[in-house]
Image 1 (cartoon, rainbow, N blue to C red):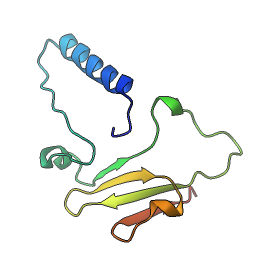
Image 2 (tube, rainbow, N blue to C red):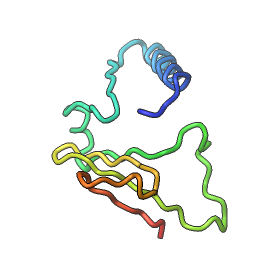
Image 3 (cartoon, rainbow, N blue to C red):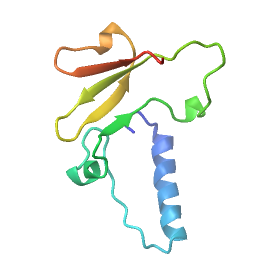
Image 4 (cartoon, rainbow, N blue to C red):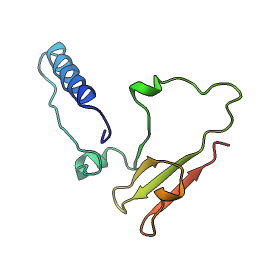
Amino acid sequence: GRDSSRDEQGACALLGTQLSALLGERPVTHREAQGHESDTFMGHFPRGVTYQEGGVASAFRAPRPGAGPVRKLYQVKGKRNIRASEREAAWGSFNTGDCFILDLGQ
């Protein structure tokens, strides 16, 4: 994704190459840049795409018991190819030109 480190990007490229070799070089690889996805790519997701925070630092852990609801803010862009990107849940994340969804975790 847009916020991935160089190490994560390199690991993605390496693992993609290894997967291609494992499958006998039959797969065709297409690269898409977050926020600039092709119509072909977006056509695979007729209900839109949602980008969420996470990755290595999150370790894909479940929320701690008693931690309370997790509040998330999504910035929604696009009319034909809809994208929702997770933003920091703070006033500074808002602007007047986009649509936002506040998920209160309930």
